[in-house]
Length: 146
Image 1: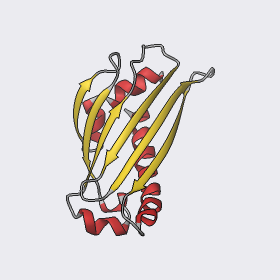
Image 2: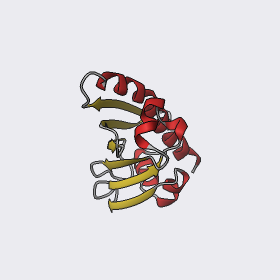
Image 3: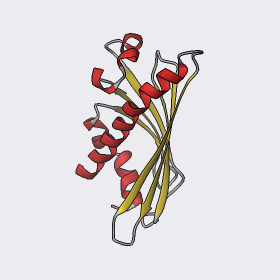
Image 4: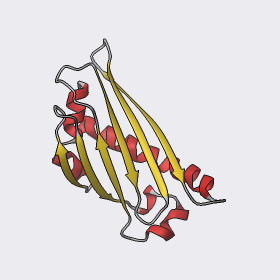
């Protein structure tokens, strides 16, 4: 897929249903993608230490945006700011989509986690990071299957 196709799939409500997400699309890829997605988290998608804060109705809210991208653009970036209501954890993900000469698009994600709690913030950050990485990987893998 071209980077534009990946961004279009991210903005497709059918894709979001696979994650049981509700999506609010503010603008399309051609204008500069902007959307908000809210999806439930199951117990295995979060660290044990966070489960007691989040409870059974745990959600992640993702604010996604990219610059305008043409159909045949060889590169695009997608930025995600995620929040977990009830947990003082901020997550920022920068995804780079780069079309390769062999016809594939290389997808790279840089994930930053930050917790504002004194003393235990670093423990929460390091505990959450692999779970966030797994969520992003699973979501990107599903894009190829749509």
